[in-house]
Length: 80
Image: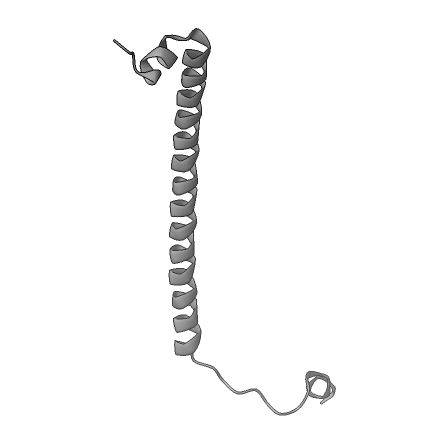
């Protein structure tokens, strides 16, 4: 009976070590992907919050009451 190549390969200690290394790399990559996704999410939340705060400030500036100043420059007003 002929054994499958993969079964023979898994019995080889060298290939088992490679398999363990690949599993470790896969876990490390998954962890880095989670960290990247969390950073993207946090950046998006900060962007949204900044946009909301800027809109509030713009609304306050637009709604503010202004008074017009005299046409005379400040220096001329001091002299008189």
